[in-house]
Amino acid sequence: MRRLASILLLLCPPAGAENLLNRLDLDLPHRSPPTAKVMSGIENLPVESRYELFTLYQAYIETVNSRRAQHWRKGLLNGEIVDHPDEAILPVRQLEEAAAKREPEVAALEAQVKQEKLDAPPPPVREPNQTDWSQPPEETRRKPSPAEIALKAKRKELKSFKSRLSRSKGLSLDWSDAVWADLQKVDAEHWSITDQARTVSPRHTGAVVCTPADAPTICVVFDPWKTGEPDVYEYSAWDGGSFENRVPPEYMLHGLPDRP
Amino acid sequence: MNEREATLDPTNQLVIIARLSEFCQFRGRTLNERDPWAYMRDKLLQIEAPLLALKSQLLASMKKHLLEDMRAGGMDDERFADYKMLFEHLVSRGDFADLAIHLSLAAGPGAVQWVADLLPQMKAANMFDVERLPAAERGSSWEKLVKELQGRLYLDVLEKVLARKPRTAKRKAYVLRKLRAIVAEYCTVMHIPITAEDTFTPFMLPRVEALVAANLRLLNKYR
Image (cartoon, rainbow over all chains, first blue to last red; front, side, top):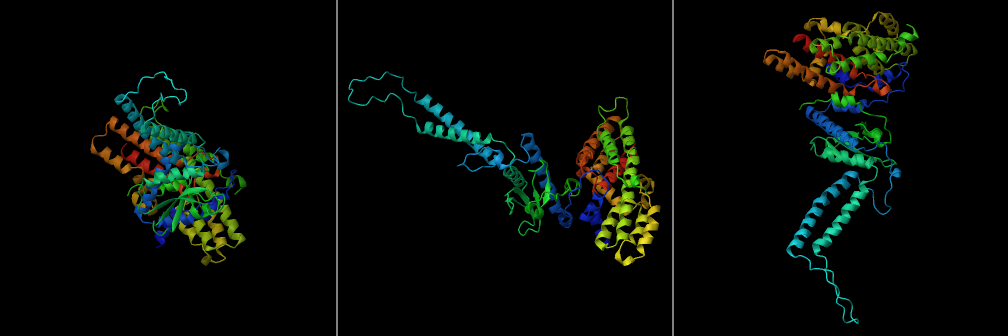
Protein backbone atom coordinates (compact mmCIF):
# COMPACT_ATOMS: atom_id res chain seq x y z
CA MET A 1 0.00 0.00 0.00
CA ARG A 2 2.89 2.32 0.85
CA ARG A 3 4.60 1.45 -2.42
CA LEU A 4 1.35 2.07 -4.28
CA ALA A 5 1.01 5.41 -2.53
CA SER A 6 4.55 6.36 -3.45
CA ILE A 7 3.96 5.35 -7.06
CA LEU A 8 0.75 7.39 -7.13
CA LEU A 9 2.64 10.35 -5.70
CA LEU A 10 5.21 9.93 -8.45
CA LEU A 11 2.51 10.07 -11.09
CA CYS A 12 0.17 12.62 -9.53
CA PRO A 13 1.93 15.60 -7.97
CA PRO A 14 -0.23 16.97 -5.16
CA ALA A 15 -1.44 20.53 -5.44
CA GLY A 16 0.73 21.54 -2.51
CA ALA A 17 3.95 20.43 -4.20
CA GLU A 18 3.18 22.58 -7.22
CA ASN A 19 2.43 25.49 -4.91
CA LEU A 20 5.79 24.95 -3.26
CA LEU A 21 7.40 25.31 -6.64
CA ASN A 22 5.46 28.50 -7.15
CA ARG A 23 7.40 30.03 -4.29
CA LEU A 24 10.65 29.79 -6.18
CA ASP A 25 12.33 33.10 -7.01
CA LEU A 26 11.35 33.12 -10.65
CA ASP A 27 10.56 36.41 -12.27
CA LEU A 28 7.47 34.84 -13.81
CA PRO A 29 3.79 34.84 -12.78
CA HIS A 30 2.82 31.90 -10.61
CA ARG A 31 1.65 28.66 -12.18
CA SER A 32 -2.09 27.94 -11.90
CA PRO A 33 -2.98 25.42 -9.19
CA PRO A 34 -3.09 21.93 -10.62
CA THR A 35 -6.00 19.56 -10.30
CA ALA A 36 -4.54 16.97 -8.01
CA LYS A 37 -7.86 15.53 -6.98
CA VAL A 38 -9.08 14.75 -10.48
CA MET A 39 -5.65 13.48 -11.54
CA SER A 40 -5.46 11.10 -8.59
CA GLY A 41 -9.03 10.03 -9.37
CA ILE A 42 -8.02 9.24 -12.95
CA GLU A 43 -5.02 7.28 -11.71
CA ASN A 44 -7.36 5.00 -9.74
CA LEU A 45 -9.40 4.13 -12.84
CA PRO A 46 -8.91 0.85 -14.73
CA VAL A 47 -6.41 0.80 -17.57
CA GLU A 48 -9.15 0.50 -20.24
CA SER A 49 -10.85 3.64 -18.97
CA ARG A 50 -7.59 5.60 -18.87
CA TYR A 51 -6.66 4.42 -22.35
CA GLU A 52 -10.05 5.56 -23.58
CA LEU A 53 -9.43 8.99 -22.06
CA PHE A 54 -6.11 9.11 -23.90
CA THR A 55 -7.92 8.27 -27.15
CA LEU A 56 -10.49 10.99 -26.48
CA TYR A 57 -7.70 13.47 -25.82
CA GLN A 58 -5.98 12.56 -29.10
CA ALA A 59 -9.25 13.11 -30.97
CA TYR A 60 -9.60 16.41 -29.14
CA ILE A 61 -6.13 17.53 -30.27
CA GLU A 62 -7.00 16.66 -33.89
CA THR A 63 -10.22 18.65 -33.68
CA VAL A 64 -8.54 21.73 -32.24
CA ASN A 65 -5.72 21.60 -34.78
CA SER A 66 -8.09 21.23 -37.72
CA ARG A 67 -10.27 24.10 -36.56
CA ARG A 68 -7.27 26.35 -35.89
CA ALA A 69 -6.14 25.59 -39.44
CA GLN A 70 -9.52 26.96 -40.53
CA HIS A 71 -8.61 30.16 -38.64
CA TRP A 72 -11.09 29.76 -35.84
CA ARG A 73 -10.52 32.41 -33.23
CA LYS A 74 -9.94 32.04 -29.54
CA GLY A 75 -11.82 33.98 -26.90
CA LEU A 76 -14.51 35.13 -29.33
CA LEU A 77 -17.56 36.55 -27.59
CA ASN A 78 -21.17 36.54 -28.77
CA GLY A 79 -21.20 40.31 -28.88
CA GLU A 80 -18.40 40.32 -31.47
CA ILE A 81 -20.44 38.70 -34.23
CA VAL A 82 -23.33 40.19 -36.18
CA ASP A 83 -26.36 37.95 -35.99
CA HIS A 84 -29.91 38.20 -37.20
CA PRO A 85 -32.26 39.13 -34.37
CA ASP A 86 -34.83 36.52 -35.44
CA GLU A 87 -32.42 33.64 -36.07
CA ALA A 88 -30.73 31.83 -33.21
CA ILE A 89 -26.96 31.50 -33.47
CA LEU A 90 -26.21 27.99 -34.63
CA PRO A 91 -22.83 26.34 -34.05
CA VAL A 92 -20.58 26.36 -37.09
CA ARG A 93 -20.47 22.57 -37.35
CA GLN A 94 -24.26 22.38 -37.62
CA LEU A 95 -24.27 25.10 -40.29
CA GLU A 96 -21.59 23.22 -42.21
CA GLU A 97 -23.55 19.99 -42.02
CA ALA A 98 -26.76 21.70 -43.11
CA ALA A 99 -24.99 23.26 -46.11
CA ALA A 100 -23.24 20.00 -46.95
CA LYS A 101 -26.55 18.14 -46.79
CA ARG A 102 -28.23 20.56 -49.20
CA GLU A 103 -25.50 20.69 -51.81
CA PRO A 104 -26.16 17.20 -53.23
CA GLU A 105 -29.89 17.88 -53.07
CA VAL A 106 -29.38 21.02 -55.16
CA ALA A 107 -27.18 19.08 -57.58
CA ALA A 108 -29.80 16.33 -57.90
CA LEU A 109 -32.57 18.84 -58.53
CA GLU A 110 -30.46 20.64 -61.13
CA ALA A 111 -29.87 17.34 -62.91
CA GLN A 112 -33.59 16.60 -62.79
CA VAL A 113 -34.50 20.01 -64.21
CA LYS A 114 -31.94 19.57 -66.95
CA GLN A 115 -33.37 16.16 -67.83
CA GLU A 116 -36.89 17.58 -67.91
CA LYS A 117 -35.80 20.24 -70.35
CA LEU A 118 -34.20 17.62 -72.54
CA ASP A 119 -37.26 15.38 -72.46
CA ALA A 120 -39.77 18.16 -73.00
CA PRO A 121 -38.03 21.14 -74.50
CA PRO A 122 -39.79 24.41 -73.74
CA PRO A 123 -41.74 25.82 -76.69
CA PRO A 124 -40.12 28.64 -78.65
CA VAL A 125 -40.85 32.10 -77.41
CA ARG A 126 -43.66 33.66 -79.43
CA GLU A 127 -45.02 37.13 -79.61
CA PRO A 128 -48.30 37.61 -77.78
CA ASN A 129 -51.09 37.64 -80.32
CA GLN A 130 -53.53 39.96 -78.65
CA THR A 131 -56.79 40.39 -80.57
CA ASP A 132 -59.40 40.72 -77.85
CA TRP A 133 -58.33 43.58 -75.60
CA SER A 134 -61.18 42.99 -73.18
CA GLN A 135 -59.47 39.79 -71.99
CA PRO A 136 -56.20 39.48 -70.01
CA PRO A 137 -53.09 38.81 -72.15
CA GLU A 138 -52.22 35.20 -73.04
CA GLU A 139 -49.69 33.31 -71.00
CA THR A 140 -46.50 33.14 -73.05
CA ARG A 141 -44.25 31.91 -70.31
CA ARG A 142 -44.25 28.25 -69.32
CA LYS A 143 -45.19 27.57 -65.70
CA PRO A 144 -42.26 26.21 -63.62
CA SER A 145 -42.29 22.50 -62.90
CA PRO A 146 -42.35 21.18 -59.31
CA ALA A 147 -38.66 20.35 -59.65
CA GLU A 148 -37.83 23.92 -60.60
CA ILE A 149 -39.82 25.26 -57.66
CA ALA A 150 -38.05 22.84 -55.29
CA LEU A 151 -34.69 23.79 -56.80
CA LYS A 152 -35.28 27.47 -56.21
CA ALA A 153 -36.29 26.87 -52.59
CA LYS A 154 -33.34 24.59 -51.95
CA ARG A 155 -30.89 27.10 -53.45
CA LYS A 156 -32.33 29.77 -51.20
CA GLU A 157 -31.80 27.56 -48.13
CA LEU A 158 -28.22 26.76 -49.17
CA LYS A 159 -27.46 30.41 -49.73
CA SER A 160 -28.91 31.24 -46.31
CA PHE A 161 -26.71 28.69 -44.54
CA LYS A 162 -23.61 29.78 -46.44
CA SER A 163 -24.19 33.40 -45.58
CA ARG A 164 -24.58 32.48 -41.91
CA LEU A 165 -21.30 30.57 -42.18
CA SER A 166 -19.47 33.70 -43.23
CA ARG A 167 -19.45 35.02 -39.66
CA SER A 168 -16.42 34.89 -37.39
CA LYS A 169 -15.90 31.42 -35.93
CA GLY A 170 -14.75 30.53 -32.47
CA LEU A 171 -17.59 31.17 -30.04
CA SER A 172 -17.69 28.85 -27.07
CA LEU A 173 -20.70 27.07 -28.54
CA ASP A 174 -18.79 26.61 -31.82
CA TRP A 175 -15.86 25.02 -30.06
CA SER A 176 -17.88 22.88 -27.66
CA ASP A 177 -20.16 21.61 -30.41
CA ALA A 178 -17.26 20.74 -32.73
CA VAL A 179 -15.37 18.97 -29.93
CA TRP A 180 -18.50 17.11 -28.80
CA ALA A 181 -19.24 15.88 -32.34
CA ASP A 182 -15.69 14.59 -32.90
CA LEU A 183 -15.53 12.94 -29.50
CA GLN A 184 -18.80 11.11 -30.25
CA LYS A 185 -17.07 9.46 -33.21
CA VAL A 186 -14.60 7.82 -30.79
CA ASP A 187 -17.53 5.79 -29.41
CA ALA A 188 -16.28 5.66 -25.85
CA GLU A 189 -17.73 3.05 -23.51
CA HIS A 190 -16.41 4.21 -20.15
CA TRP A 191 -16.78 7.97 -20.64
CA SER A 192 -19.88 10.03 -21.37
CA ILE A 193 -19.55 13.19 -23.46
CA THR A 194 -22.04 16.04 -23.21
CA ASP A 195 -22.09 19.56 -24.59
CA GLN A 196 -22.91 21.44 -21.45
CA ALA A 197 -23.28 25.04 -20.37
CA ARG A 198 -22.03 26.36 -17.07
CA THR A 199 -24.51 26.78 -14.27
CA VAL A 200 -23.19 30.29 -13.59
CA SER A 201 -23.54 33.26 -15.89
CA PRO A 202 -22.25 33.86 -18.57
CA ARG A 203 -23.46 30.57 -20.01
CA HIS A 204 -20.20 29.45 -21.42
CA THR A 205 -20.25 25.95 -22.98
CA GLY A 206 -17.76 23.11 -23.06
CA ALA A 207 -17.55 19.40 -23.80
CA VAL A 208 -17.85 17.65 -20.42
CA VAL A 209 -16.32 14.18 -20.28
CA CYS A 210 -17.31 12.05 -17.28
CA THR A 211 -16.80 8.53 -15.97
CA PRO A 212 -18.50 6.15 -15.23
CA ALA A 213 -20.87 6.91 -18.08
CA ASP A 214 -24.02 6.01 -16.11
CA ALA A 215 -23.12 7.53 -12.72
CA PRO A 216 -20.44 10.19 -13.23
CA THR A 217 -17.99 10.72 -10.42
CA ILE A 218 -14.93 12.07 -12.25
CA CYS A 219 -15.48 14.85 -14.78
CA VAL A 220 -13.14 16.95 -16.88
CA VAL A 221 -13.96 19.59 -19.47
CA PHE A 222 -12.43 19.77 -22.93
CA ASP A 223 -12.62 23.50 -23.61
CA PRO A 224 -10.21 25.18 -26.07
CA TRP A 225 -12.11 28.47 -26.24
CA LYS A 226 -9.86 30.57 -24.03
CA THR A 227 -6.43 29.76 -25.44
CA GLY A 228 -7.09 27.93 -28.71
CA GLU A 229 -5.10 24.99 -27.34
CA PRO A 230 -6.41 21.53 -26.34
CA ASP A 231 -6.97 22.50 -22.69
CA VAL A 232 -8.55 20.20 -20.14
CA TYR A 233 -10.09 21.65 -16.97
CA GLU A 234 -11.38 20.23 -13.75
CA TYR A 235 -15.18 20.29 -13.96
CA SER A 236 -16.18 21.83 -10.63
CA ALA A 237 -13.84 24.82 -10.96
CA TRP A 238 -14.77 25.31 -14.63
CA ASP A 239 -18.46 25.18 -13.80
CA GLY A 240 -17.89 27.89 -11.22
CA GLY A 241 -16.47 30.20 -13.88
CA SER A 242 -12.72 29.59 -13.46
CA PHE A 243 -10.15 28.81 -16.15
CA GLU A 244 -7.42 28.21 -13.59
CA ASN A 245 -7.56 24.51 -12.74
CA ARG A 246 -6.12 23.07 -15.91
CA VAL A 247 -4.92 19.48 -16.07
CA PRO A 248 -1.31 19.74 -17.31
CA PRO A 249 -1.02 18.71 -20.97
CA GLU A 250 2.06 16.64 -20.19
CA TYR A 251 -0.08 14.49 -17.88
CA MET A 252 -2.78 14.01 -20.54
CA LEU A 253 -0.14 13.10 -23.14
CA HIS A 254 2.37 11.14 -21.10
CA GLY A 255 0.60 10.12 -17.89
CA LEU A 256 -2.15 8.05 -19.53
CA PRO A 257 -1.57 4.65 -21.18
CA ASP A 258 -1.19 4.98 -24.95
CA ARG A 259 -1.91 1.27 -25.54
CA PRO A 260 -4.92 -0.76 -24.39
CA MET B 1 23.49 29.71 1.16
CA ASN B 2 23.00 33.15 -0.37
CA GLU B 3 20.03 34.53 -2.26
CA ARG B 4 21.80 34.09 -5.60
CA GLU B 5 22.15 30.35 -5.07
CA ALA B 6 18.49 30.06 -4.08
CA THR B 7 17.25 31.72 -7.28
CA LEU B 8 16.13 29.41 -10.06
CA ASP B 9 17.61 30.23 -13.44
CA PRO B 10 15.33 29.21 -16.34
CA THR B 11 18.30 29.14 -18.74
CA ASN B 12 19.17 25.59 -17.60
CA GLN B 13 15.80 24.41 -18.83
CA LEU B 14 16.41 26.35 -22.04
CA VAL B 15 19.70 24.51 -22.59
CA ILE B 16 18.07 21.12 -21.96
CA ILE B 17 15.35 21.90 -24.48
CA ALA B 18 17.94 23.12 -26.99
CA ARG B 19 19.95 19.88 -26.68
CA LEU B 20 16.80 17.78 -27.09
CA SER B 21 15.86 19.86 -30.10
CA GLU B 22 19.24 19.23 -31.69
CA PHE B 23 18.85 15.53 -30.86
CA CYS B 24 15.58 15.48 -32.78
CA GLN B 25 16.78 17.45 -35.80
CA PHE B 26 19.87 15.75 -37.16
CA ARG B 27 19.14 16.42 -40.80
CA GLY B 28 20.04 19.93 -41.92
CA ARG B 29 21.58 20.80 -38.59
CA THR B 30 25.03 19.32 -38.88
CA LEU B 31 26.65 19.45 -42.27
CA ASN B 32 29.98 18.35 -40.82
CA GLU B 33 28.67 15.39 -38.86
CA ARG B 34 28.78 12.08 -40.68
CA ASP B 35 27.81 9.76 -37.86
CA PRO B 36 24.28 10.47 -36.62
CA TRP B 37 24.54 7.76 -33.97
CA ALA B 38 27.49 9.44 -32.24
CA TYR B 39 26.00 12.91 -32.77
CA MET B 40 22.71 12.01 -31.09
CA ARG B 41 24.52 10.23 -28.26
CA ASP B 42 26.70 13.30 -27.69
CA LYS B 43 23.68 15.57 -27.52
CA LEU B 44 22.17 13.40 -24.78
CA LEU B 45 25.43 13.40 -22.86
CA GLN B 46 25.55 17.20 -23.09
CA ILE B 47 22.27 17.35 -21.14
CA GLU B 48 24.03 16.13 -17.99
CA ALA B 49 25.47 19.48 -16.91
CA PRO B 50 22.36 21.69 -17.29
CA LEU B 51 20.12 18.98 -15.82
CA LEU B 52 22.33 18.68 -12.77
CA ALA B 53 22.49 22.49 -12.47
CA LEU B 54 18.70 22.73 -12.70
CA LYS B 55 18.20 20.07 -10.03
CA SER B 56 20.84 21.69 -7.81
CA GLN B 57 19.08 25.02 -7.97
CA LEU B 58 15.70 23.43 -7.33
CA LEU B 59 17.20 21.57 -4.38
CA ALA B 60 18.79 24.72 -2.95
CA SER B 61 15.49 26.55 -3.10
CA MET B 62 13.60 23.59 -1.61
CA LYS B 63 16.07 23.36 1.27
CA LYS B 64 15.62 27.05 2.05
CA HIS B 65 11.83 26.85 2.00
CA LEU B 66 11.70 23.63 4.04
CA LEU B 67 13.80 25.07 6.83
CA GLU B 68 11.80 28.31 6.82
CA ASP B 69 8.53 26.41 7.06
CA MET B 70 9.74 24.05 9.76
CA ARG B 71 11.12 26.89 11.88
CA ALA B 72 7.91 28.89 11.42
CA GLY B 73 5.92 25.85 12.64
CA GLY B 74 2.36 24.86 11.69
CA MET B 75 3.43 22.10 9.30
CA ASP B 76 1.02 19.22 8.88
CA ASP B 77 1.53 15.75 7.43
CA GLU B 78 0.13 16.83 4.08
CA ARG B 79 2.71 19.60 3.78
CA PHE B 80 5.45 17.16 4.78
CA ALA B 81 4.20 14.76 2.09
CA ASP B 82 4.47 17.52 -0.53
CA TYR B 83 8.08 18.19 0.46
CA LYS B 84 8.86 14.48 0.47
CA MET B 85 7.47 14.15 -3.04
CA LEU B 86 9.68 16.96 -4.31
CA PHE B 87 12.83 15.84 -2.53
CA GLU B 88 12.39 12.24 -3.72
CA HIS B 89 13.03 13.34 -7.31
CA LEU B 90 15.97 15.58 -6.45
CA VAL B 91 18.22 13.60 -4.09
CA SER B 92 19.63 10.07 -3.96
CA ARG B 93 17.75 7.18 -2.36
CA GLY B 94 19.96 7.11 0.69
CA ASP B 95 19.71 10.86 1.34
CA PHE B 96 15.96 10.75 0.83
CA ALA B 97 15.58 7.89 3.28
CA ASP B 98 17.58 9.85 5.88
CA LEU B 99 15.50 12.97 5.35
CA ALA B 100 12.06 11.37 5.08
CA ILE B 101 12.23 9.97 8.62
CA HIS B 102 12.23 13.52 10.00
CA LEU B 103 9.52 14.87 7.69
CA SER B 104 6.47 13.98 9.72
CA LEU B 105 4.68 15.24 12.81
CA ALA B 106 5.66 12.02 14.62
CA ALA B 107 9.33 13.06 14.41
CA GLY B 108 8.72 15.67 17.10
CA PRO B 109 10.05 19.22 17.56
CA GLY B 110 13.66 18.09 17.48
CA ALA B 111 13.32 17.20 13.81
CA VAL B 112 14.11 20.79 12.82
CA GLN B 113 17.67 20.49 14.07
CA TRP B 114 18.14 17.08 12.47
CA VAL B 115 16.92 18.43 9.13
CA ALA B 116 19.08 21.56 9.48
CA ASP B 117 22.13 19.28 9.95
CA LEU B 118 21.23 16.95 7.08
CA LEU B 119 20.31 19.44 4.38
CA PRO B 120 23.71 21.11 3.82
CA GLN B 121 25.29 17.71 3.06
CA MET B 122 22.69 16.76 0.48
CA LYS B 123 23.48 17.12 -3.17
CA ALA B 124 21.28 16.74 -6.23
CA ALA B 125 21.20 13.19 -7.55
CA ASN B 126 22.80 12.84 -10.94
CA MET B 127 20.82 10.50 -13.14
CA PHE B 128 23.90 9.82 -15.23
CA ASP B 129 25.73 8.49 -12.14
CA VAL B 130 22.77 6.21 -11.42
CA GLU B 131 22.92 4.90 -14.98
CA ARG B 132 26.62 4.08 -14.58
CA LEU B 133 25.80 1.75 -11.66
CA PRO B 134 25.14 -1.95 -12.31
CA ALA B 135 21.49 -2.67 -13.05
CA ALA B 136 21.03 -4.49 -9.74
CA GLU B 137 22.06 -1.40 -7.74
CA ARG B 138 19.68 1.04 -9.36
CA GLY B 139 16.41 1.88 -7.60
CA SER B 140 13.28 -0.03 -8.52
CA SER B 141 11.21 3.14 -8.96
CA TRP B 142 13.84 4.56 -11.35
CA GLU B 143 13.92 1.32 -13.36
CA LYS B 144 10.12 1.31 -13.50
CA LEU B 145 10.08 4.87 -14.80
CA VAL B 146 12.71 4.18 -17.47
CA LYS B 147 10.85 1.05 -18.53
CA GLU B 148 7.65 3.08 -18.82
CA LEU B 149 9.45 5.55 -21.07
CA GLN B 150 10.91 2.72 -23.15
CA GLY B 151 7.41 1.49 -23.81
CA ARG B 152 6.11 4.98 -24.43
CA LEU B 153 8.84 5.72 -26.98
CA TYR B 154 8.51 2.29 -28.65
CA LEU B 155 12.18 1.65 -27.95
CA ASP B 156 11.38 -2.03 -27.39
CA VAL B 157 10.05 -2.19 -30.96
CA LEU B 158 13.13 -0.41 -32.29
CA GLU B 159 15.35 -2.88 -30.43
CA LYS B 160 13.53 -5.75 -32.11
CA VAL B 161 14.08 -4.08 -35.49
CA LEU B 162 17.79 -3.70 -34.79
CA ALA B 163 18.15 -7.26 -33.51
CA ARG B 164 16.43 -8.92 -36.46
CA LYS B 165 19.10 -8.36 -39.10
CA PRO B 166 22.72 -7.16 -39.24
CA ARG B 167 23.05 -3.52 -38.22
CA THR B 168 24.00 -1.84 -41.46
CA ALA B 169 24.29 1.93 -41.80
CA LYS B 170 21.01 2.01 -43.69
CA ARG B 171 19.11 0.10 -41.00
CA LYS B 172 20.60 2.23 -38.24
CA ALA B 173 19.68 5.41 -40.12
CA TYR B 174 16.09 4.15 -40.40
CA VAL B 175 15.91 3.42 -36.67
CA LEU B 176 17.36 6.82 -35.82
CA ARG B 177 14.80 8.60 -38.01
CA LYS B 178 12.00 6.79 -36.17
CA LEU B 179 13.62 7.56 -32.83
CA ARG B 180 13.92 11.27 -33.62
CA ALA B 181 10.27 11.48 -34.68
CA ILE B 182 9.04 9.65 -31.58
CA VAL B 183 11.13 11.72 -29.17
CA ALA B 184 10.10 14.95 -30.90
CA GLU B 185 6.47 13.97 -30.48
CA TYR B 186 7.04 13.16 -26.80
CA CYS B 187 8.73 16.54 -26.27
CA THR B 188 5.90 18.61 -27.76
CA VAL B 189 4.81 19.54 -24.24
CA MET B 190 8.15 21.17 -23.51
CA HIS B 191 8.39 24.88 -24.16
CA ILE B 192 10.99 27.58 -23.82
CA PRO B 193 10.26 28.97 -20.34
CA ILE B 194 8.61 32.30 -21.01
CA THR B 195 5.71 31.85 -18.58
CA ALA B 196 5.31 29.88 -15.37
CA GLU B 197 3.29 27.27 -17.26
CA ASP B 198 6.37 26.43 -19.35
CA THR B 199 8.64 25.38 -16.48
CA PHE B 200 9.18 21.68 -15.80
CA THR B 201 6.58 20.34 -13.42
CA PRO B 202 7.35 17.72 -10.75
CA PHE B 203 5.56 15.32 -13.11
CA MET B 204 7.74 16.18 -16.11
CA LEU B 205 11.22 16.59 -14.62
CA PRO B 206 11.78 12.90 -13.73
CA ARG B 207 10.34 11.96 -17.10
CA VAL B 208 12.88 14.16 -18.86
CA GLU B 209 15.60 12.29 -17.00
CA ALA B 210 14.07 8.93 -17.84
CA LEU B 211 13.72 10.01 -21.49
CA VAL B 212 17.44 10.75 -21.68
CA ALA B 213 18.31 7.52 -19.84
CA ALA B 214 16.10 5.32 -22.03
CA ASN B 215 17.56 6.79 -25.24
CA LEU B 216 21.12 6.49 -23.97
CA ARG B 217 20.59 2.84 -23.10
CA LEU B 218 19.48 2.13 -26.65
CA LEU B 219 22.28 4.13 -28.27
CA ASN B 220 24.93 2.60 -26.01
CA LYS B 221 23.69 -0.95 -26.44
CA TYR B 222 23.63 -0.92 -30.22
CA ARG B 223 26.55 1.43 -30.87
